[in-house]
Image 1: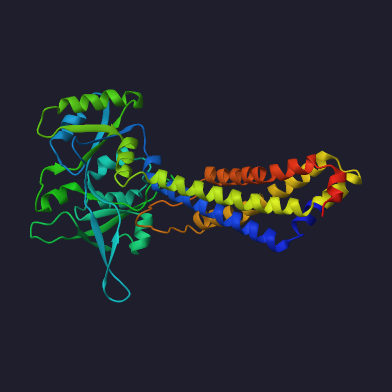
Image 2: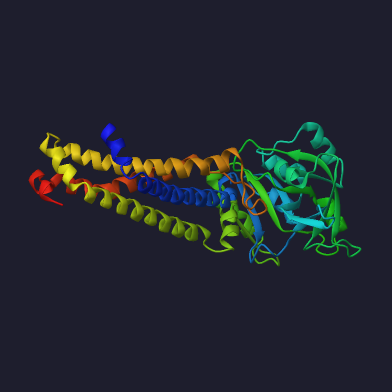
Length: 390
């Protein structure tokens, strides 16, 4: 162990730069994993006991509100909630006096029915009571309330990019009556919900229609059967439906912006390859410089196995130090300091434990791969040949 430490300190600057290079690569890898995990948060929060009904052609087309009771009559359905994407931006005064627009997800929905489908959402009973008794009320996720600096009882002003009121104004006002939280780390706490009844009565166009229906089912194993029954009920109607699992719906939504996962995985692979080349180059140089020393070690009694372990151990030590230098700051930044590079795009941002283990595993694999060739070469080296080398 002492000899291994001395070899690491032989060229401290080179060792430090190699550790730094591996650390930067693993930090970027871990950060990309956090971005990918956050991007798929909607998929991860999906429940097999929930289905989504949308227009057969596209989510941008509306469905009649009358479908709600018909869907609820389908065998196996336990509850139905209608929802409409509101597409609004907050209108808050900035430090310079100008309006600061903040984007976040907001929906008009049957709040009571919606909450019954999502037990992950936690709202204090008194706040829920006030929310259900105020048609101008709304509920905000705890994280978006913090971003907007809102608390229960405040006024919230939004500008919808889609829906105008009957008077032609795109400005809508709400009373913040409740804040919701969730124990689930993957559940989005940056959304807003408000009564669909108030929305339907006040909007300028599209009355009597909704964007989608979310429904609960008794048995997830029957999801395909129930989905087929709903779609067949509305087949050949002016508003045909497409029913799918909540996970499939979220994946379809993500797919609208392209194969983001392939892009991030490709970048991550390039980073890992660069890390491997840096480490391998360092180990080859280090082994080549110590050819005579390896001959001396063998001459004084060190076995081939000792030399092999010494070189492979040095490569693993450098890689693991790089992992510590790269993964630890990424974990601290995402999970402890709760840094979010784009809170309006990533409602949930964290580094999962699996990604930490994956990054550490890559460090071990890199160390072994970069050290195996010099280690085998040193193991096979004959003492007499090594002592004659310059």
